[in-house]
Image (cartoon, rainbow, N blue to C red; front, side, top):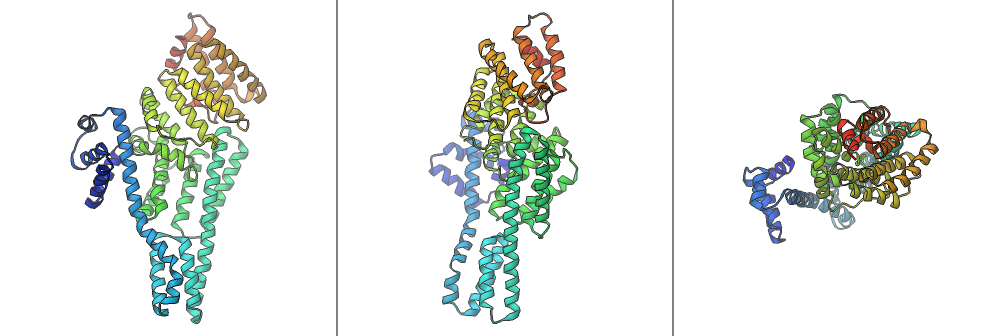
Length: 477
């Protein structure tokens, strides 16, 4: 919430007035009043809700929509001069044929400087190509711009390569996250090294940013290490974003930086900085998950958020907040890791609120709509989580059908490779079949055994508190 307030307070008077008037004119009066309250009055969220006569869920939606409107306005304002520059590049041939040579060269050099400020690489190659031709009779200048042109074309190819490596790395990590396969791990190491080789070819702030995104994530989640140097890199990236504040890509990549900070603090700082990082990024979570998979492993933010609920012991709030946050969310079912994580996140929210029937429907939709044969371990995990819902619903018929399928899959994978699944089936059967006497004690022993055997690859059971309260809940089924 503090992030939205800070943005609103930092708006210029012109921008604030323009956004306010736009909201009023589009009949979004409550959003306009929320903007005004946050800008002009020192009111708490509770007091603002009273003034607007809205409940907590409606207020949350209102904040999210206001944040989106402000971002759209700022992006439009930022893109205006960029659009003007691109139009100027499109008129280069008119300049050549209608202006005196000296004026044409001066205009192109001025355009070069502006394009460098905005880091418009494609347009810069056109300017350099034109300048080297205009200066063909001036050997020294012609050579200079020929070199700049060649260097910039090579840089563009390197940049394209880096962007492809970035996307491929995080696609590959999705496979590794679901399987923890050593071959995938080697592939990630190779992609990381290749990214470093490409980035080291040039002194480029953009390549440094892409390189850092991969290196930090790789160190945290593949090598499973953290160090204080990461905070220095965070600061360097932020300085780049501040310096090139007109860059449209950097405007959006700020969210990747916030995401990486959140992941880092979820490991090294369980309270202070993590709480602020979660608060800052919370309203952008649906956008990160759906739109940022080319720049990071975006679904991971859902699991970090779920762990934060568990840490604060507020997991029962997860259902209501998740429903509001993802009200207009459209899942990409072709991105299997994202789809699995998102579905389990929604099902977990239902589980924590004891809405087991709704959780089962969500999980069944995943199983019916997606072929998970490529990820047998992930398929097993979804079925196990669904079985837990049937246990909590006391639906013996559905459970017995599903447990037979689970046991067949355990045999196919091999019991030694999924010992936790064997223990879970014992827990489920004990929950449904044991009498009340001594039931909790037996479940506690099985749960202790389960906690020692949970897999390194993704399992929804890694994001549920498997403790005495869990045993108590099962014992009372």
